[in-house]
Amino acid sequence: MTQRTLILTLSLVATLFGSGCSRGFDIKTPDGFAELDDAEGYRYRATSADGVVLAVRREKNEPKGSLDFWAAAVGNELTSRGYGKPAVESLKSQNGTAGKKLAFRTVKNGRPSVLWVAVFVSDDRVVVVETGGDADHFSQVESKVSAALSALVVG
Amino acid sequence: MTHLLRRDLGVALLLASLFASGCAARSSAGALAPMAAPAAATEASLDASPAPGAIPGGAAQAPASATKSAPGAGLARPAPAPSPGPSAVQAKEDPRAPKLDDAQKPLLVYEGGLGVRVPKAELADRLEKAIDVAEAHGGYLVSRTDSGAQLRVPSQRFRAALKDLGALGEVTRRSVAAQDVSEQYHDLEVRLKNLESVRARLEQFLARAANVDEALRVGKELEGVVRQIDEAKGRMQYLKTRAAYSLITLTLEPAADKAPVVATGDKPVPTPPARPLRMPVKWLGAVGLDQLLSLE
Image (cartoon, rainbow over all chains, first blue to last red; front, side, top):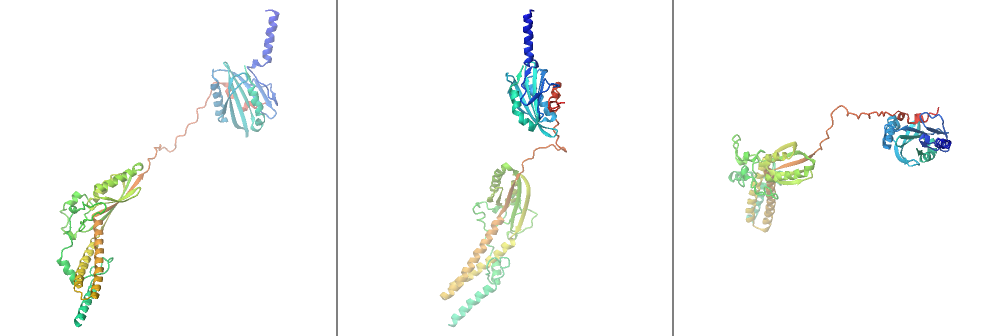
């Protein structure tokens, strides 16, 4: 390997990490949100000053399932835990990956709360975007969160 | 002159005696205006003359020729109404029955009520069949409503008709009542005889009237007697018809729809809760607001 080849390879790796594709997705932090570093279980997490949180998981597609399977699995899991039946909406990432948004309305600590879970499925990955918080606060940033979902790039 | 006075006095006395003694037949036929012949004459005519019209007997004189419009119109005297029963039986003489001549047999008016439960959807059809039953027994329809009818059937067929009508569904109510109108009819007969006797005498007086004034007075009396005769005959005809044809009031009751079959356990078995889903995917349990909003 020549020195030139080595430089090109390192540059490519640096570019990939820098663009976020190493996480398997790319998401823009909405205006008014701050990205958190210590996101246990999440590949990305950001919060607003009012406690509305936006977070992304990336999991292996195991057992291997379709978008419908994973959307239903997430929906059933949350419904069984008292979140009620979700309103389901189809959506697409910015780069064209099909996804489904499950919108729940629930009560958390006595306060009406909102939880959205968007599921995107690629051949070997499942990307799950979660966002939620106090219903009053969520409504104030709902459009920003929706814009972040639309701008999501699933790798 | 003396002759004329004596004649007027004779007519006056005769008329007075007719009015004064004519109460013999008035006791049970009070609806009719008082008019009678002298008691002696009445008794004489009763003994001497037979009852008007032959008394038909049993089923043989059933008004077979009677039409729906004029039931029993051809009866000279009502059949001694038999006890409600099949006509075949009634046509024969019951050897256990006391030997009575026709004049002594009771004149009975039968009325029956019948409640029959039928399927709701078939109510109109069963009502039509009920009318058919009455006509098959020689009867006729008197009136009808949406759920019932009044039917008249020959008294000889009364019991058989009741039985056939009961077969239209489930009998819920049955009633039979008999009214003995024999005495009422007999009183009318006596009264009629008296009136006819008076009429005959008045006709004789009218024929011998010496002047117009006398003829007018007798004629006026004669007119009243004839009217009373017609009334008595009409009343007798009415009784005969009622006795010859029994009235059945049929009421059809729609049966309630069958209730759905329901398990008779103490309580309905509740649907068990959904089987808890436990996907073998660890991260699914972490999805939700608990972890999402935990910023510490």
